[in-house]
Length: 212
Image (cartoon, rainbow, N blue to C red):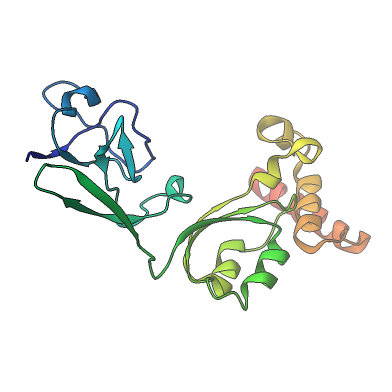
């Protein structure tokens, strides 16, 4: 009976973002045909459980998820029973981590509401907010409900008709309109005329002070 253990990248393997580039003897890919004559091949490097070309040429995968690209992977350990002739019976034993790694997508208020009583709210999370307006300290507020938020994305700020001007075009609008727009985003209402005059006066005073 012959068993091979190898840490390498077999051609056609399913990759994730968390694996580092690997080269063995100057080759970054190994053809699975090299392992065809062995009774079992236990492979390491790729994090997703998978077989290559034959059931007995197998990556058991990592025990835990190491990036959000592995969100849909079902982690397991592989139990192999081999008889005297080298025939293998392969069983995958599922692993259930204490905290899963997941991606949540939705609007800020909706996610806060659904997370307060969620049994899995302590999972490791990437949250994508779809809101198209600015939100004050979203990460801190999300972590009050989801304590293990690892990453926050705001694709809603850059969607379609809600795409806001950036860079030079936005700066060319002027300081007062920028402030009024920021105020409206943060509070959900327009600044009253009295407040606008006060801000305009402060900006003018700042400019005159700089000239002095």
